[in-house]
Image (tube, rainbow, N blue to C red; front, side, top):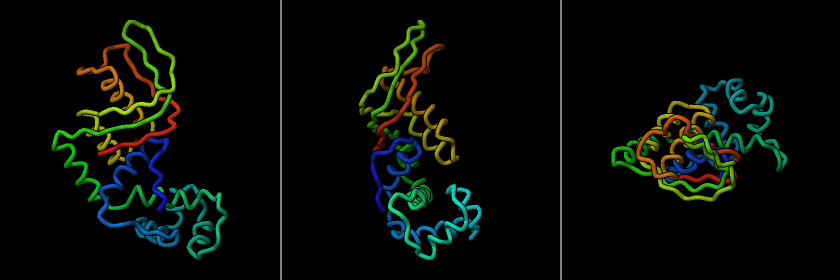
Length: 192
């Protein structure tokens, strides 16, 4: 498994951080990964193909160990899906432990970060490289959204709120007119 640790989506970054808590390694070969995913979808090749944005014939070709070009995105999509689904109980137990112990989550990122202040002034998004500690309730909100399979936009909105609170040292909800925008993520990594 390649497990690239720097990713550009909140969903993948959370999945990669969760992988540090696994008690067993996931399948290594593309064929074994596809077999695992097919078991998860009750052997519904069409549903899995839809989830991976591929056609069933391509999945069947991968299952028969047909060689794939190096730049083929399908094996990477299969790997991402396995990482997303592997050991859900271990993942939940780790999340519950972090939240129960007033857990914090470290975040390192490089992205275009901008803000709008309550007085109406704004800062155009600038490329920033930051490492911050996300304090409660934001880790729990991220975990809950992840468990509910929320969209990337919803996860980014939660993360933007968390960055606003941590970066500006706010111990209160954002006032009317205050917002933080997180655009064009180059690198994102969670530690917990």
